[in-house]
Length: 113
Length: 114
View 1 (tube, rainbow over the protein chains, first blue to last red):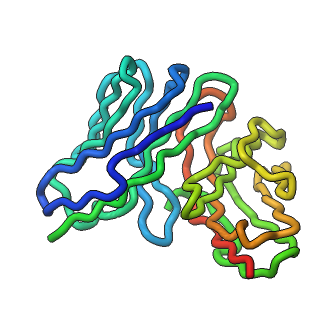
View 2 (cartoon, rainbow over the protein chains, first blue to last red):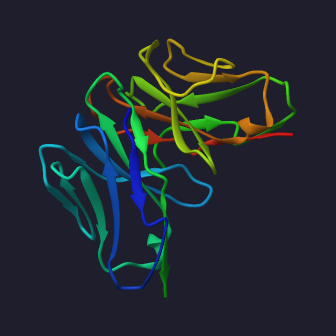
C-alpha cells in the first residue's frame, strides 16, 4: 500500500519568514495530494491540494509543488503569521483500488512573533 | 466550519463497552469517511460509505462497524472497547465516491476508554 513520509516533525520560524514542509510517497499510482491544517482541538482543515497533472499550485501565501518523478511534494508558506501555527498533514490518494487517503505523520509549525 | 457535524464531542467509557459515534455530512455530499487519530498511529483511514453502500475499507478492526443511512448520516460502532481504542475519531465527507476529490473533516469525537 501507499506510504507517506513527512519532514520535519517540528518546525519553528520567525514571523514573516517562510516555512517549507516536505513529503514523499511510495505509490506511483497516487494522483491527488492534499494538505491539511489542524489546530488544537479541531478537525483537519483542507488548505490546498494538487493533482498529478499539475506541477505547482498557489493560493495567496500558500503554494504546493509536486515532483512526480521523485515522488515528493512540498508545502510552502510565505510571510508566516502567528495564526499559521498548527499541525500540518500531507496526504496522498491512490488512483488505484485503494481509494483512500494515506496521511503523513504531521509537522508542528510554530511561528514565533 | 466545514459543514460536517459529529456527536458527541467527548465520550468516556469503560473497557468492554460499546459506543456509537454519529456523523452528518455536508449538504449534498454522498460519501462519508471515518478516520482514527491516535498519538502513535497518526491519522488512519477506517472505512468509506457512498450513498449507503460500503465503498472502501482501511485498517478497521472487526470490533468496529459502520453504516450510512438513507438520510446520508453515518454511525461508527465500536464494541468490546480496549484501552488502545482511546483516540480522536473523525468523519469526513465528499461529494462523490470514486476518483479523487476533496474531503472535508468534522470536529471529531474524543473517545476515552478507562
